[in-house]
Image (cartoon, rainbow, N blue to C red):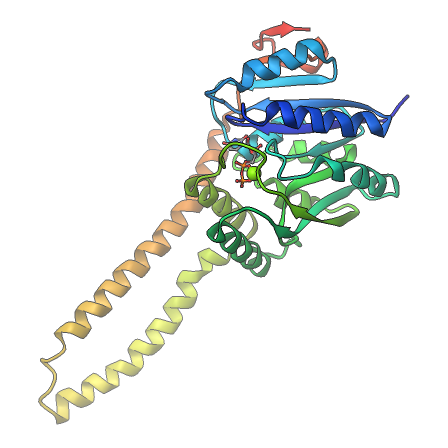
Length: 324
Ligand code: UDP
Ligand code: MG
């Protein structure tokens, strides 16, 4: 049996790049001389993306497509892709060509040398805003410090995973998945491949600040308890300081007459403390919200339509199979 590679490509309003991405991926995959599938996951796009992919799936038997019922988010889209993949290895790649498809042969080579996960590590990011580069850099380093799981820095989801790894990934079934962290958590033989992240080929970023914050919170809360401990650390430090300040105040009350002139410092302390307590409450809320998601146990995503799959790969009867 020939080796098969599944390439998972999440799509959210990517009509501007989809053709170009398809052709570059196709060229690379044809040169590999292996069987392959291009598994597009349309994450509730509001533009022409789904019909463009549908067309591709009619003309090219290698193209498969899952169409979500709405926008569920990038991490969920790639999770769905790996759920439906059936290759001996799966490769996750962004649709905007920031992750160069030309790196795939090297990934496959490393995999054939015996590595189970080959992740692409950015040594340089081109064409992104200063804020994006800076916030990403800080986030990866903070996460690295706060967690015991070896999550490599400057590494996104562009990676190859052996079947045994992505089969384990499927079992985790987390409701707010931080896929790159989960893959690190799984272990196995992992290696890095350095690359320069290109500029987006066309279109705008689909990761506004709100989605970036959600992703970083998912990363933090899934892989570290440290933020929850913040309250106890701060509590110890502040009550220590309060205890010392108590003696100062006692001294002033007993031996001087300057105690009433403390209004501004009182207000400042109150505002600072109020803010601090709310931040900690919010942090606890982030964890509780995620616990609530796990308890509700709703499905991670809803597939409304699918194209290009054999009937056996679609596991729910509710899914209309429009094209076989
Ligand atoms: N994406 C998605 N769902 C979303 C947002 C993004 O499937 O809700 C996809 C998007 O189409 C792209 C990938 O995730 O293939 C990465 O998004 P983008 O390139 O916009 O993020 P950036 O590179 O700017 O961080
Ligand atoms: Mg991008």
